[in-house]
Image (cartoon, rainbow, N blue to C red):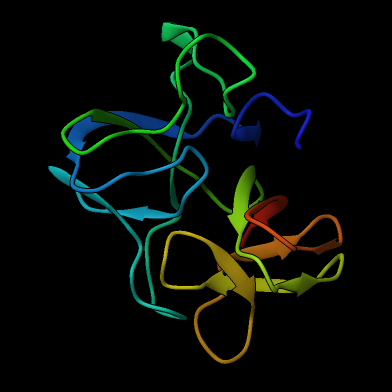
Length: 143
């Protein structure tokens, strides 16, 4: 389990709360949309570097050990979204089965998580190595 408490690790993303979740979303998921926020759904596809952020002002962290409520957004919840510029760092998610080495480029896996870059659009580069046996956090420098 991660001991990190926030999604935005370095830099000040532009934050908005313009949209509501169209599905369940975890803080740290790569997201798309303006008025309806969804997990980015095109594997290896182009997308803005926007990630769901935690609701720290409501006492919610990035996991259920911080505060008394689940940190996830349910359908209809207003989603706090951060838009990240190149060089900023974010705590994103990778799915089970991914092996990512430090300094590997990553791309969208098409479900809100990231995967090793193959031939799509680079989202960033991994700042640590992970072998995910479950949904796992990954520190990423936005590209």
